[in-house]
Image 1: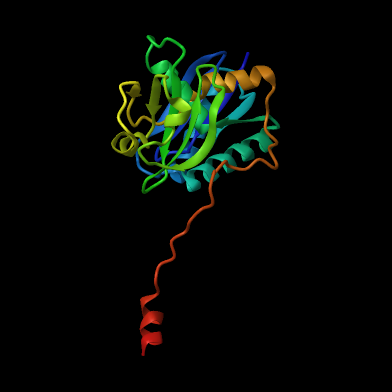
Image 2: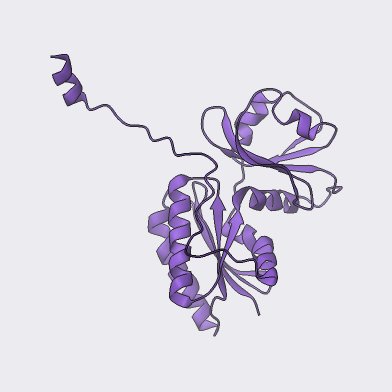
Length: 238
């Protein structure tokens, strides 16, 4: 029996799910914007209570590793590590962009299988975190931060149907050169329940992360905005 506790904190919303032998057994999702620190611990506690009531315990913890929200990723990974150390169980890390590609695969059942999957996470201004995957989830374009212009990804995806998903698609749809080969699935972001397939695969293959040393996959350095101290500025001017 494979029992996995899944944690997804990479986007504006936070979710936790319990999966058992390839099925989602329980899922809790918070719809409040940037509420991860308050929601995560009580949600995990409820999942643990549910497992205890059914005589089961988690065999691994899976966490979405990024890219995405800097704060969300740190909260999710830190909490997942703590659970793994405390219970002496392995840690599974799921690349967020690959997770979104899987979500796109399951959104419809009429895909032909030769389409390209392009998840996009809003990184502010005209920038997105993105990658390009084929239907076997092999990377055609490795995950990266990309400043969009009209010809972005055209060379890498030309001649193929391209499926876009994620909260970065709103800007992409207005910036990228229009093509009848583009399929837009909207702004949906992943939840912990969407982690099922990739977490189960990692569990079967014993593809575990180094709990002590793994870090979030930010893809770029955090650009902190430092506010102006108006009092000091006034003193300098005088």
